[in-house]
Image (cartoon, rainbow, N blue to C red):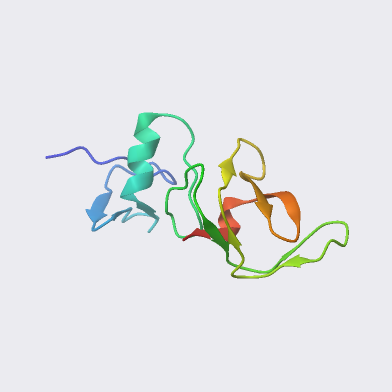
Length: 113
């Protein structure tokens, strides 16, 4: 029997694997097997809104309209951002968006393409 990781939300030891996800029966938290494997290797794991593990150089898509501070406009939903760089900050992604320039995004507002 293989040792499955404890739930990252409630620390329950009763997790089980269902396809490409781990599921906690006590709090109903789900997380991808990829993220658990990356966490065991060490370091911080960056995941998009769907739970896919992000890496430097990935291409992501914005999942909702994002208003820019300072009246700079709006980054529309569906905007593709190429060649992201992951940083350890409150905004996890540094990138350049065509028409807007350099900016930082949070991983919860993007989806891996």
